[in-house]
Amino acid sequence: AGQATSAEVVGALYAIADLLRDNEDELGRLDAIAGDGDHGRGMTRGSAAAVQAAESAAADGVGPAAVLLAAGDEWASKAGGTSGVLWGAALRSFGDLLPDDRPVTASDLAAGAEAALAAVQRLGRAELGDKTLVDALAPFADELRGAVDEGCGGAVAWRRAAAVATKAAAATADLRPRTGRARPLAERSVGTPDPGATSLALVLTRLAELLDD
Ligand code: ADP
Ligand code: MG
Ligand code: MG
Figure (cartoon, rainbow, N blue to C red):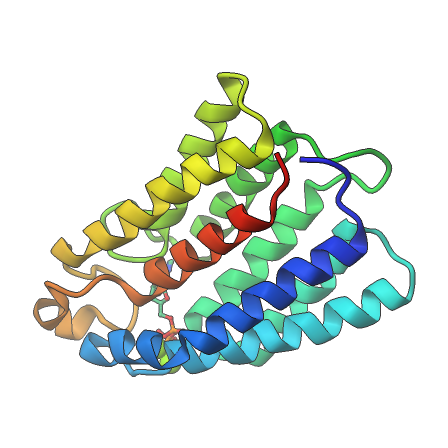
């Protein structure tokens, strides 16, 4: 995947923030069906705050890992809501696995995704099938690891994993929420994909376009 510089991490966060702003209304609409309708707003706010924090960290001259730690902290504190806390933890954990002193390898990316999943599950306690973003993140991390172990480069592996995450996010439409704010209106959510799984798949797909082969 080449050398991740702090500037590349900031650029990726910019792309994520743009994407989420473009999808804010749609994500809000999805969350309004059985949740409280704020998922688009929260993701937009969190990612915008993450960009700001990342820019100022990068301007201080720190490496990509520290940039992601700063971004994760701000995302969690400014997004509001469950997904913001989980996204903040995911970014921090992913960042922890990025080397500051050598190029990022495909294996670093797989380890980062596994660490992000572990952090999300440690905090949120959701299992596969609970209709949360875990239903997109777990298959993503599995596919990424599998592709990397087969010898794929980071960009190819990420692209494959993002495609799996996109399918998995769409498939959450069939599920009933077993945790989170959508649980009381679980039946109403059947037929609609989970908002958090949907936004995660959008972001992972956008990141696939940014990675070099
Ligand atoms: P809130 O539910 O606090 O309003 P958001 O609307 O921003 O927060 O995010 C809702 C999304 O958060 C859900 O669609 C789901 O993907 C995710 N989520 C909720 N609870 C959990 C959990 N315990 N573990 C993982 N993801 C969760
Ligand atoms: Mg919500
Ligand atoms: Mg809310």
